Image (cartoon, rainbow, N blue to C red; front, side):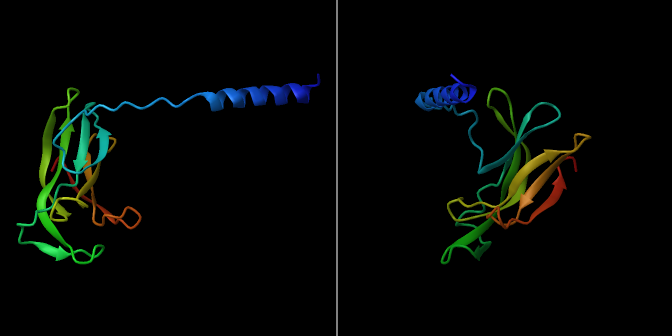
Length: 148
């Protein structure tokens, strides 16, 4: 048996065993509840998990609305429901920064608001705000530091 035949046999054997393994079903467990359109997640320098929430806009009772540029015939409602929350290891959600602008359909879907949170080398937190729902066209602007 030559070396090429041995390598080929080994490759076919490996391929056979890799194909015959069945994928295991993933199991998911809900960790935290009550977040409104959760977006970016990051661990802070304190080891805590922080979540940017785009919010739910202002709802159909809001007087501040504009026609949707992407969905003809629907309005977008402005509200101050965007937030950044901290999630503890037991799943407890604690708001850290609230009252951020949010724009969404009347039912709270397709929300645009805080998209991500990050920390610089000194541990200063920053919120990244998305001004357009489509990530391919999103113009994100640094809007404020959590520390003031």
